[in-house]
Length: 76
Image 1 (tube, rainbow, N blue to C red):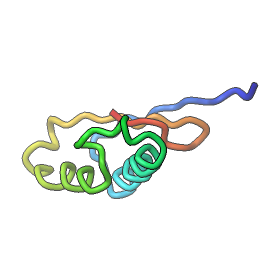
Image 2: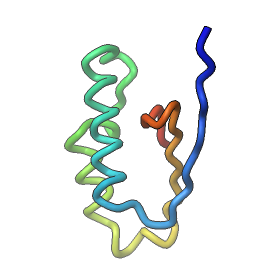
Image 3: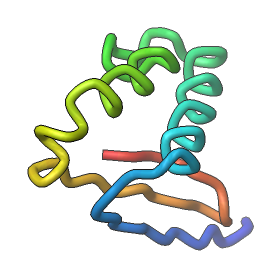
Image 4: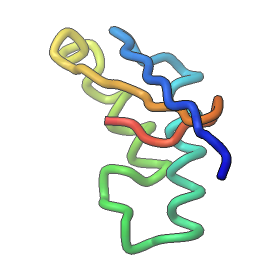
């Protein structure tokens, strides 16, 4: 059994690379387990939600990305 290394990154401001990583994971999950996707976690909704109220709400948004073996595994 291979040992997986899990790391997390907590960032103050999500950038375009972070959003693209999240969108990539959303695409993978949608392709494999559509039943796990909620309305706020689709590729389009991620772009819309993170962009539309960014100026007003970014001071209050906290997020974290979890990586396993260098690949994004989850976000919250």
